[in-house]
Length: 238
Image 1: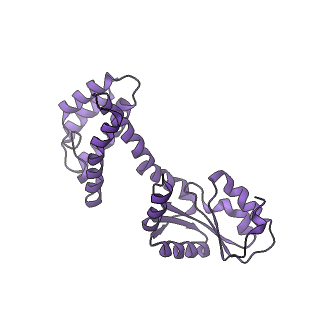
Image 2: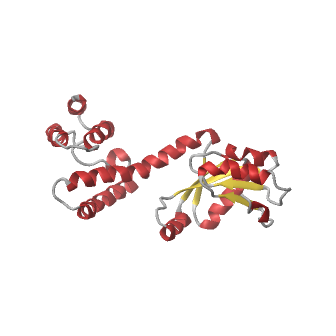
Image 3: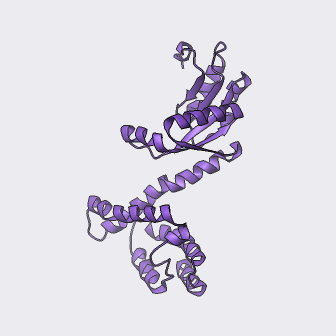
């Protein structure tokens, strides 16, 4: 924080600290002598623009600009920012500035209401972080069939890629494949029996939770409701 007084005059302030420091940084910036900047943005996915309220009180337009990109490694992650979608929200002046930055990065932007920022970020976590967690559960389950951990990942990754490819071309209901898409009662029964034998695994619970939603997708695509209901009864048993 003691470095803030050395900031050069800029037209846009962009705060990229960890989420827990954004409010503190905004308060510290607001306490400095008047600056040329008229807009302040932060890059948090979960926090909305109101965390920059101290700067708004000083006359700044405030907003947020969050990339929908999975960044786990610096160089590749930086490259992915150039083709990402960005969620922007905040004051009109700040949103205009954020959209200009996104265009310069070669990305695309979309706007949401400030009060929906946490819900937006929850969606992003489901689509990215939780998919990684689900993949880990699947790889652990395959490892119990005798494959090494690296081999299990190698075997399952093409399947995941083909699923993502299906999703890029079709609705989720049409992209769904496998036993739930077919409402295949006996195959699901065998899965449940095998998974019930696992120790120290999240796979049985994950299978049932996601299986319920898979059945909804399958029914949207025309699966037999009677067969879907039989599967639901199977999964509801302890």
